[in-house]
Length: 366
Image (cartoon, rainbow, N blue to C red; front, side, top):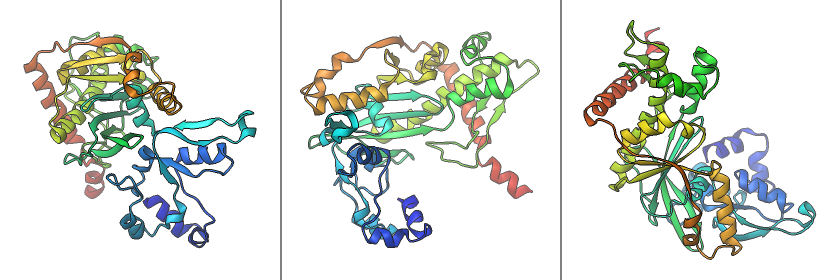
C-alpha cells in the first residue's frame, strides 16, 4: 500500500493516469493472470490481497478507509477472488487451448496448505534462506499482541481460514556465511558433521542479525554477534551455535504464537533446505518440546497451489480428501534435558539482547 502510494506520487503522470483508468495494480499473481488471459482478467486472491495493507481482513474487501488514507484510486485494484475455484481461463493461443485458472495463493500460505495444516493450531515452518513459520488459526482472524502478522491463509468457497505468520531473516543464510564468509566448511552439508564434532555449543551463541532481526523483535539496527567465546572455542562450537541460532529464532516465533492464541503445540511440519539437517531438527524438537515432522515432498508451495487448483476443478471434492496425500520422511521426538535447555535459552536471549540496536548505538557514539 505505501509503495503504491509512493509510485503514484513520484512517477511522472502516474496519479493522473490512474485517475483516468489507464493503470492497474497487482502483485505477481495478478500480473500472471493478466498475461495468461491477455488482459481479460484483473484478479488477486484473498491471501495475496491480505498482504497489501489495503484489504480488510474481516470483510475480505478493499478497505475504503485505507484507500482514502493512502490516496489510492479504487479503479487501480484487481477483483479479490477465492484461492480455489475457476476464476478465469487462459487465452486459447497461450497453450493451444483455453485452460482454467483455478488455484492462486501467496507463497507461504500455499506452503501451509501444501503441508495440509487443515486444523486450527497446526504449524508449518519453511527453513530456507530465512524462516517462515505459519500457524493456522481457524475461521476468525487473530490479531497479534506479540508483533506477528495476521493474514488470510486461504479462502475456499465462502469459508476463509486465517493464519499468524512470523518471519526470520537469517536461517539457512547463516550456514552460507560459514561457507562463503568464514570458510570453515566447503559445502552446506558439512555443517552437520562439524556441529556434532563437539558435544554441545561450549557456551557459544551466534545471533545472526546480519540484516537486522525479524519477528518478533523487528529491529533493523541489530547486527550479528558471536558471544561466549573462550580459548577453548573451536570451529565446531561456532558451527553448532549457527545451527542452534536457527532453532532459537523459530522458538521465539512459536512462543509468540502460543501467547497470542493459547493453543497447544503438538507438532511442527517442516520443509525447506535446512530442514534436511538432522542435528538442527533434533535440537528444534528438543527446544520446542514437540515432534518435528519432515515432509517427503520438498516443494510444498507448488504442492499447495496444485492442491488448490485440483479442488477448484473437482479432482478432489473437498480438502479432507487430501489428508491421505501427506507423508513424512522423518520424525524427531524431543529428548533434551529441560535444565540444560533452559540455560541455553538464557544464553540465546542474552546474545540477542546484545545484538539489538547495535548499528544505531555505534552511529550515536560516533
